[in-house]
Length: 620
Image 1 (tube, rainbow, N blue to C red):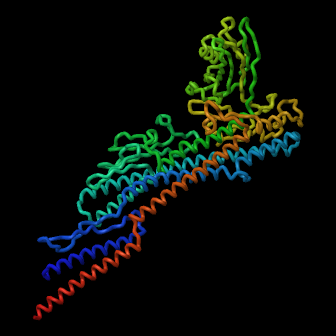
Image 2 (cartoon, rainbow, N blue to C red):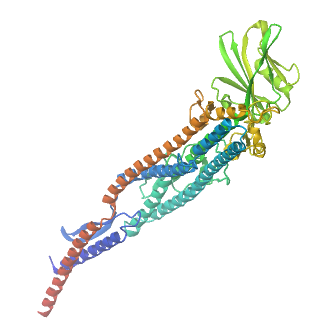
């Protein structure tokens, strides 16, 4: 080997070690930089005439374990979802209050029933009457505040969706831009490695927001799809669009039918074409966005429904009066007379009959509706799983209502108005195809002195709550936000006892009725509460239902936290494994530094020796 050849080999060695030292310095400097992947040199020996003549740098390697990276992204998506769900459940649990605390909903309800019990023990005691009114007002205000805070949580979820969509669009644009920059270069240098790090960081950010699938192209580009197969990044980035709707109330709900929906949806727009509704198509199944959507449209809507049902059941338990029909006959026909004078929108007429051909008992519930745009009503309008629900447009008066009833049964059961406000229901007499077995009305009392124990204790912001149904929605939706103690009771607490002009001041009848209804009388609740089902509704007295609500919320919060903690452990474990292979280890870099310094010194020594030899030759 000649001196010039040795000089060249040493010089290339020094250049390579200098590059290696720069990489080590960069690794150490970026050890704590998010998304940074450890870099190493890709070296290759060079040869000429069959002999080694040096070494050269082919490029820079990113020490990336793509399998671990893919696993980590998938689990990170799930961790973002479970973490966000746990945060919202914790906030919801705080809203309901700690069981047993003075401010909890359950405790305030117990205070209310205790005050009613004290009144039933001494109806003429003015302080006992005032105690009932005060406890009822505190309970109503707590229900109002709880429901308002639930809607505030839904508003936060709506804002969270908007922020997440903006972040996702920024990440999609940056990924597409880096794809373009990488396609314009073929070099595997430091700038290329930096771009790859940046792109991975944006992909990781996107994976926190929604579930994605990444495919690698042949030209360093990547294509990104939702887990349902919709493309997010290809030759150009798609765009997520979210049409936020502003103020959120209990009746502001999402619907897959955009003409009915009152909430914004997330759409995927490609090349300005009509967007794909990702919520309706279930295109986002995990990540922060999915958690926000589930909270806004399902979990918190159900929490509101639980409160609405509680408020409605409590109001109806005290105000609704069910009156059986009076048995009548007309020739061979038999049936019942019902007084429908007090029937309000949402009130019902029920009847039962036996279909003699099959010996089957059937139940029918007629619901008064004053807005025909709300018709027809589904059978799920009532909690009775075995009844047929028929909405009757009462806006045309009793005669029109009777005509609709007759049309529904084609003469097998006959409806008429013999006088005044009486509804007569008769079977088909000699034909004997049906036998009526019962009929009744359920009417919401509107006055304090109706001659019975029922009274409109609670109102809907000052108006009577009767469960009315209209084309714009049901009165029960958002009732928890509006429930209040009847102003007539607040003005005159003697109405807690007096139910007619002749009621003695110490009469126990109405106080005992109130206590019985509030503590022991079973109520049925719809499946929208999350309890029971359409075929087997949940039924229980109000205290048990409220305890069920509190327990269910606590269990859900605990389960969400446990799931989040478990998912975090998985992510932490994968992150540790990923860091061991792809992250910067300072001890390892220091060892590499010593090796490179030694190599640099050796090459420098070779250069020094060659210089000394050349100098000696020149002196000779």
